[in-house]
Image (cartoon, rainbow, N blue to C red; front, side, top):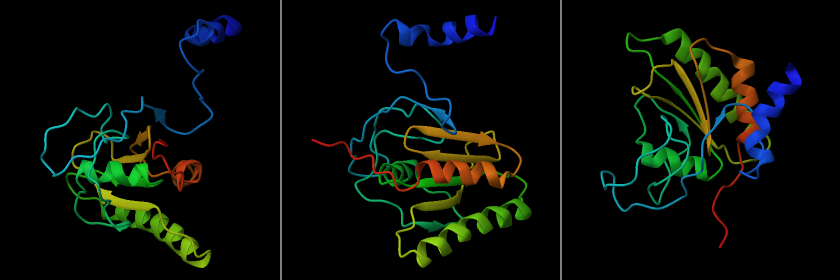
Length: 170
């Protein structure tokens, strides 16, 4: 029975429809929408295939790496992801100071490590009002959403994706 399910899951790959999915990596994978630059916020562009977005049209510049108390426009988030960033976002319509403190603790753990190792921090923490889940982790083409704080899950996602540059080579 199990072997039959595995064969069924791999059927598209066996028929030449692309690489087999890598289920060992954290988060759900979304197709890469490219890295087209737009000139201004509000300029029309093709829709994102995930929310929060994980690739696609974005601003030419990034949002400064750091912790925010206001949402970051999607078009900036995507460029941060392209540059190897991970974005941690939360949604609490009625407020959630305890969750925010826990997420800040994770953020500052990585910030302190980056400073000690003299590395560039590629991490953003910000609210995101447009999602159903309380927590979302994004990286280039990857998204993980959940409702309860799970530091090990957050660490695994960050460790898997932070610092990987996704600029398309020409």
